[in-house]
Image (cartoon, rainbow, N blue to C red; front, side, top):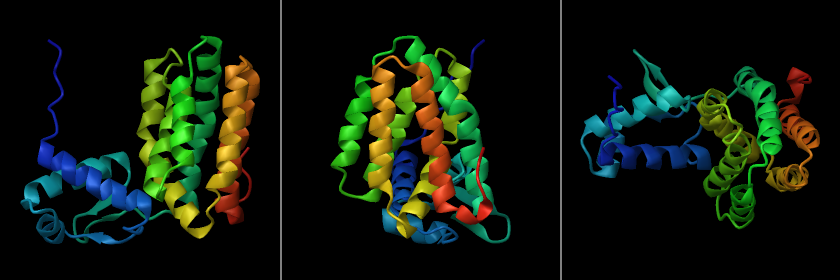
Length: 215
């Protein structure tokens, strides 16, 4: 018998999305404590949905949970960034290559780039950029590969939020996104995959130059 996932209660979902938006916008900084009672009072809910939201965010890598210190926004350092981006480098270009070879329509990718271009804050831009990348791999034909990449999406967004706060390089990345999409739409699977690999590698090299180059 197939089990059906339990839906997240609406209050928990509301709190979860609100906290995630604050993390990705930089309003909540890495290492900042997330106190259940304070958040519950701010959102007008009991501590239960806050606790469940924090557990879910811990599962996606945005929040760190400690038995003694409680919850806090996950700290981003070079090791964490390189770990996340190494996974992307290994998997995402190949997923895009397969998407292009399958002849998948990429209208959603173009729409995501347009939303990113007119975004009014870092969180909105981050969400649009994440959606752009997801459209490139979601139709690769291997659902497991897509799920593996989904699992690092929030962590990659956290790295981006921290990097953008120090050096807002999103305009350069937008140009790189356009080139990746151009190659994909032209049916150049290998060229698009190579451009995506360069895009991912160059970002973490710029953000964490002291750690050397990713290959």
